[in-house]
Image (cartoon, rainbow, N blue to C red):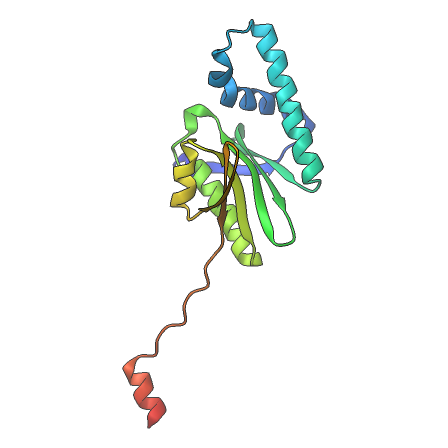
Length: 176
């Protein structure tokens, strides 16, 4: 069984806070390493940034759902989405570094796409320009719909299948 076959999603709880902070910090470590801050200062700044992000998501999307991605009951990522009237917004998807590239994030997003398709909704997300995840989103059918500063806005919608052309026999039978 592969990691893609074995992962599960569950709602985040307050007891997940330490994991979520560590996950967030892992995604920003390279960015902040260049400043050469002492570890305590960097840790405090990361915590402030983490809380600011969480607060922003909760203010802008009060009914958003933060889920923990687990593999064999061990947290390995988060998927934070908000269902709105006409779309599902992927606020964040992050998988721990060691498990990236194994299809877990792709399958999480496909699940969001299936949910959206069943409800007739679009899926929207933003990605920092130059982030390698942009290629994943494009492979999954997301298209750029805008850009705001350093972020690219992307959207996906299930395209209705074109009505099949009648076969020549059907035309013959209809005319007969």
